[in-house]
Image (cartoon, rainbow over all chains, first blue to last red; front, side):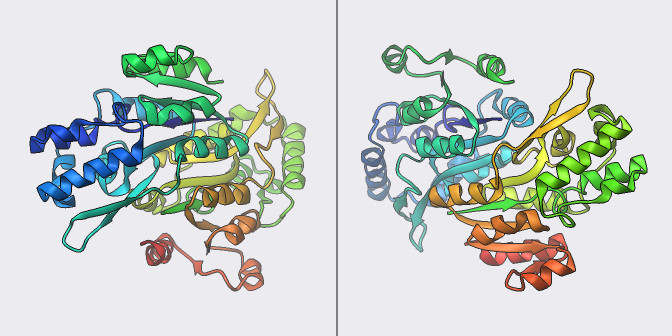
Length: 200
Length: 200
């Protein structure tokens, strides 16, 4: 039996931090895992900016509330869920994802958590598990699933490498040339075709 | 972070084999995991009856197409998915479950597969994994999830025992007295209350 693991931001949803950067005018927050592969370094950088600017969870959830899934993502997720078990593996935080997961019909999401202060400050973050994407894929394989995975950036790399079949979705040019063995999908129709070919 | 594992038949859906028994008039097919804890013995018994009576996958899917989720199950599953990752762990077969999973909004389902003959006969079944319910719960725990599980019958027992919190849903009287330590929910409202108490 088969199972599909999908990254969330960049595949089904827009990049939440980039949306926050645009809304707040803080260009420094446009840095993502596409630019900075070291996730802890990236998160410390983000939390420092929020702290400095006095931006809390309330302001961020307000921005997230205005976002929608990427065009085509709702239909794509709906189709995929009807074919195979779908698990979304994301380095986002449950407090960020929630309003947008509703719009995707709540596929199962494995992610992390923010540690919030009483007044709504984002004090810290807690990774549920280090390298959770790769470890989750491996756990599903140990449960006798053949795993197909798709993601768009460096934090998906170990997941794609661990999976039986990895697919890059709209990756940065640099990543495409560094990892030429992965098939590349530039839109949801092409991602669906790539997955359909692999489904039995 | 928390994750919920639910049994399918008896918790979200009616017992498919009992529905088939009623529709075909074959009372022998009313035997379920509630009556026979040895799953392989039960499946061999069922497949022998289908073979003897000339009932194939077409007839069974026709029966399944007439079924609906248990009253309250759609709303319950919708609520649950909005709170935590939901994984349905079932000893059913993907070919049986599919038309009914649509009515539940396709939560991620870990189950087994039937081996079908060219003419639609059900020739055999293939367990994806022996004792998959328990092993899946354990895999989620190793991914740093605290697991809440609910099920209604003997094939859920190892899952409930492995979980951080196990809940019996409408269990047979015998099971209730044999395992008095599990909280018991007799309807979806009570199951929701039991789970709500455990969610953080």
